[in-house]
Amino acid sequence: MGIRHIALFRWTEDVTPEQVEQVEKILGGLPGAIPELKSYSFGADLGIGTGNHDFAVVADVEGESGFLAYQNHPDHQAALRVIRPMLADRAAVQFDI
Amino acid sequence: MGIRHIALFRWTEDVTPEQVEQVEKILGGLPGAIPELKSYSFGADLGIGTGNHDFAVVADVEGESGFLAYQNHPDHQAALRVIRPMLADRAAVQFDI
Figure 1 (cartoon, one colour):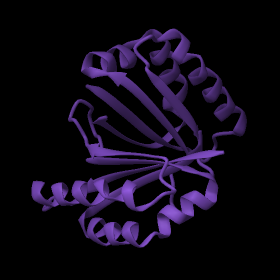
Figure 2: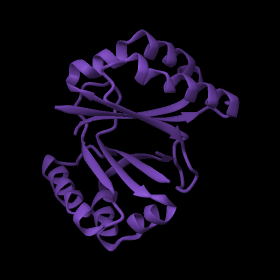
Figure 3: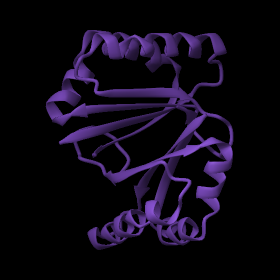
């Protein structure tokens, strides 16, 4: 069964637009590098809600094995090394689709 | 342009499985009632991540007008009246897709 993985990020106050662009560039390369990613979308919050996090990632994979393959892929791990120091908060859920 | 709205919920400790089932039943009725919902998925966290929230909702709509139509629809408002008392925490992002 398909699994939808969601991660919402809140950036620290000192994160710059250039850093967010770098994150978008890195994430944009993941679908071509990780075959387990059946669908991948991400982007900055549009500012139309109140109290929102700053950035979202949605990854659709096949089964828990697909989720783990995505999580553990070297390119995803490299993305996390860029993202983690930027995080003030992170919220995540994986659910069946 | 399409907008993807994401809301992640963390339930209070006293929320029961029956209450979550009720939420799923109510949310399941929204796509048939709100034509602005182009795609709608939701579900309980699978427990394969650490520190996760408990439940996710993903609503794809067309433009900010579609997002507001969804947010303000009476059936969505009724769902929120059930969900809000169950919430310990909520995280949300809207982004372009």
